Length: 341
Ligand code: NAD
Ligand code: TDX
Image (cartoon, rainbow, N blue to C red; front, side, top):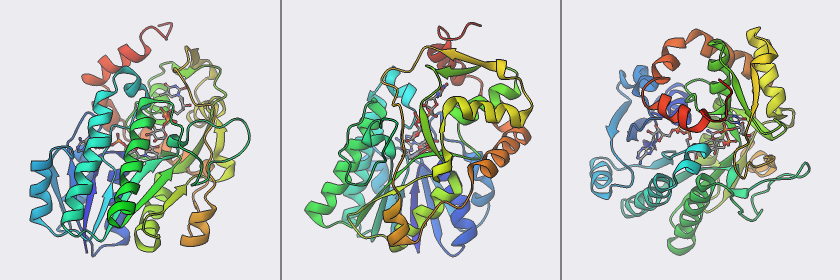
């Protein structure tokens, strides 16, 4: 079985590479990643040392480069994760999001279709549905109503992927997952940013009044969901994947929990100017994945958060190296005027 994983040096992609290496040890993996600011080969270095995984640095929107990748191996399965993935960066500038998330996805679809790929799993997000009020859940048929440029670019890519099935019967599957957490997450996202800032005794910049709700899922539960979708999902279908109900939590509460775990004072939290069009709440109904694939998240948020806090505490070298250079300019641009010091 030959598997192409795009974005395999990023957060979820690298966890998927480790997961496959452990649970599908016979699969041959090819990782394609441009190694943008978010990609880090160290995340998968141990797997790359073995015989089952090779790496190609390439831009998924570069059809000549990607054409070489598809002609070097006949892939049975594609997991497409490469993306610009951070909402705040999409607010600062949307073009890279359109290029990678929309054009890059279409480039892959064209090449995968002409090289007879058997399954194409497009890894999308619950953010394409927009924002929920305090009640209710997104189901797979909820109309798409994205609010950020990031979410709009992912929604556009979902529609191109689904159109490829409708028009050409190309065997695609789309997943829409809630907020992931775990090892190797770039410290611009809420949890690794807050954990690493707390470890450095820096302020935790909480947007608005901190009552926005996210549904948290451990990245390994997401990886298991992706394997089930690839192996058992129905072609042309969308599957929501998300955390347990108990992991639907207000940001403020999660910030306090992680401070407790690190034995740091609540006073590190600073309420700052809100993100524009900040979605109030995400929560997905995963009953389709449960019914059709027998999938459910297995890691409780309580357990997963403790383990994640421990990982960032023990792997300071990993995130300290990232929190330099380009990261500092991004941090200044996004938080400079928001934070008091
Ligand atoms: P990430 O930003 O950590 O990783 C993205 C990876 O894609 C990086 O390694 C980067 O170098 C690579 N990349 C970016 N542009 C590229 C290009 N043009 N060509 C090749 N590679 C490129 O993102 P993540 O959090 O791991 O998310 C992975 C996927 O899962 C994304 O498609 C995202 O939309 C989706 N998703 C993420 C979450 C979440 O909570 N993080 C939840 C649901 C869905
Ligand atoms: O500094 C911050 N302060 C803050 O209060 C940051 C970075 C975030 N937040 C809030 C905003 C959100 O309500 O925390 C919540 C989570 O923020 P992000 O980590 O930026 O994630 P979110 O906007 O929810 O989007 C995430 O989930 C879906 C991922 O970044 C996407 O890639 C994924 O598709």
